Image (cartoon, rainbow, N blue to C red):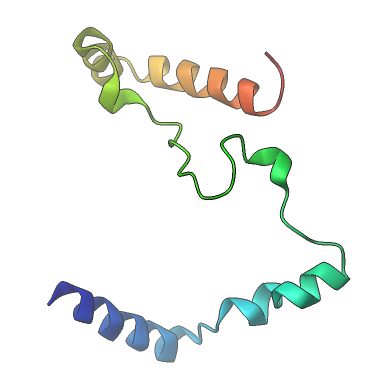
Length: 91
């Protein structure tokens, strides 16, 4: 099935480009804890175990806004800038 295909592609990419496990790049949880590089829980607004909604909310927007987003790219840029300001605490 398609899931098995993903594993095959991943194995090919690993061999071709030399990808390694995350631990090689960022270390194990224990190594990160020793270096005081734990998770930043301040960035998680919904808590552990909850899926955070992605910033792109256009799928749930009113149809008139969807149409505007398609015809005027600056509207999307403006909405993204508002979301960035909220995430950075610049309400």
